[in-house]
Length: 636
Image (tube, rainbow, N blue to C red; front, top):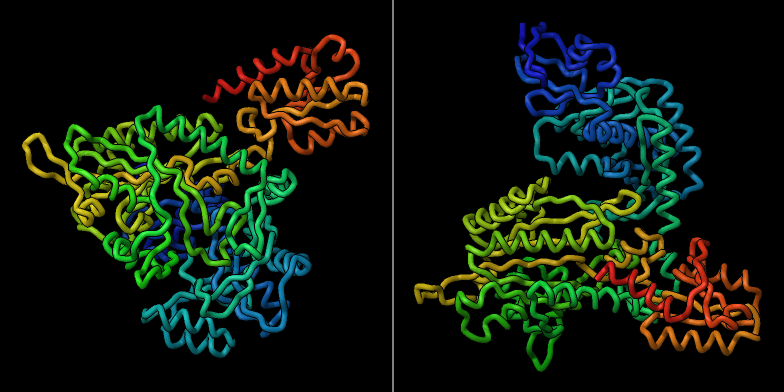
């Protein structure tokens, strides 16, 4: 007999032939129905895995994130099975993982290009395979026999994966006549799969390298029931409506041009004004928190990038050029110039902390396949700051940045999640410095009682970081604010300050952004608000609309009065019907339409109408100015 400890601390005895599925059934029929896999002694296993020793067991159900991931991973296999059934030897399968919103599978196919027109027949075959309730069985085989199997099947990509694994045995999963290389675990059978939807097709290089073959990636999603799937698809449709690229074009905010170059934003008047409003807000907020505004050059000598470590660790993302026989690098980050400002004179402990802030434009060589509107570009501006402080001041400075993030995200209406990204494989600095930096970030989060996750190995090459992930109106996550703790670059650039003891000491540097890339943040804002910006941020706050030509001169005078008072206003004096002009203003998402007819002209008033259709009481232009100022003051 073996002893199984359950999550509640109780211990049950079973024979050595038991499985996690048997344990779930012994606990209750309800748990057995919901079980999809298990965790035994901290290893995830299939429900059919024999348990041969005592240990701790936890049943994984569809109600847990891990259970949903397993559900989606098995559905990825189901999709690959269906594609192979339909297209046969013309298609090779590669990899098909679960992702946050569903799953994908990459296929190699010379003779067929997948499109949404293929989705219906693939989904139909998936439904047939799910209805057949095929058992999903795990097999462990030798490396050589797995290679031979996939060679016979003509699956060259699977052969390459196995050859690169370097393991003597590998695991396979079979369902019907379909077999796939996989670590698992998986659902017990295809009958568990109830609701799924193929969503899009994209290109993807094998193993993410442009040197390799281009594959076809089919994205899809899956949920335990049709109601949850419908809810997700509704959100997906809403996301399409909110797509910042479409709204940006409709509101005439920005554009991209192949003539200018991929990933380079061209800001139109309204978009440039929106950006200016955001940047002015940033300057005010930083100045009142004790930051000094600085500006650094766009290019710096290559030797400087070698000193910082960027040349060895980041150069594939940089652009380089030669000037008078001297190498220069176009900056991908703003920290180097800030350190040079610090080094320009001797510093005392009395000077610290020093907080340098720059709306710094940077350029990074992003691969063309990942460029995506404003959300992923090659040239962008960061609300970048670097704080240089004593080790004793570090904790307070991290907390002040976190409080800054809290205040700003509250203004925009964002909730957010926090995670700490730790040391990556490619990094610089000593183990001791990395440990000190990571501990400082963790302690600050603990003191502020901010729950957080650990993102192993995703820190910057020079230090760990706190990443802030915003949650928008559709509950999607966006990476924006970041706080990086760095003991390494101050060492490399020999930054010092004179302490109370008269000796030189090394400062600590915090790299941080609040909004992150301005371009990306505007893209997120457009989708969060669906283009309906709050009044203080709207490029156009009001439009004056006359009913007939008789009020045209009065409408012009109202426009002049509002503009002189600082209201961002335009007028629509076209010889069109009033309803038509109001609808156009609503499409342009202008917050207020100020209608002027004969009565308003006689009374020297305007009739404000909000973009939702709500009408306000008539008021004088001066009163409307005060109304706008009072609403905007809430965000200052």
